[in-house]
Length: 216
Image (cartoon, rainbow, N blue to C red; front, side):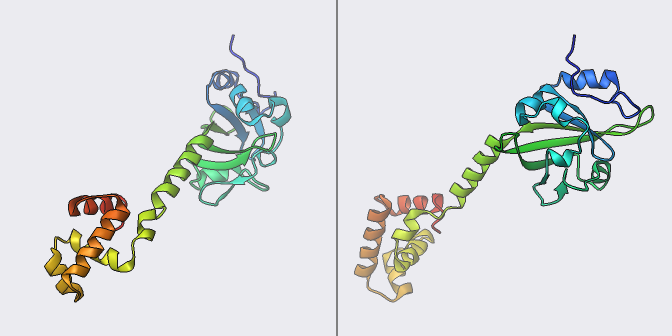
């Protein structure tokens, strides 16, 4: 028999039994609100993710549990929030919420919202969510790594970077010397310094390394 815990209201705003039973079995977290933002359902997965028991949240405004802004800075589930208005204004069907668990741990929820048709019962806003905190942190770390300037760029002098750019254009020693108005010996010295700092042995390797590490 499915676990149908979560709904506490048996009045006109009660979630229909068949829908409640289906949502109770969901592996993702689910909370359901009435049009005015009052929670009427909270499944076991939601308890696991956020730490609140169904009896602690049902009947309360969602803003008391999930006060936050979405990833675009739009207020959701906060004081004065009207859940149905939020969905109708395009807040759904998918968005992210930086929020916190009952014990104060910060989490990031990826949420999808659905609105019932309300033909046979009052409209409800169904929120299906999962904990995307680890994925969010991984993406943040990857962006920081990708955007971080290469240490090689800091080791090369401005003149060495200039020589490296000309080498990447295909200029030889003589042409580079003429472009920079320096001697060929000076260019060769710069090239050897570049090789040493980048840990390469040829001009081709130097250019490949520079492009791979976004020095050019």
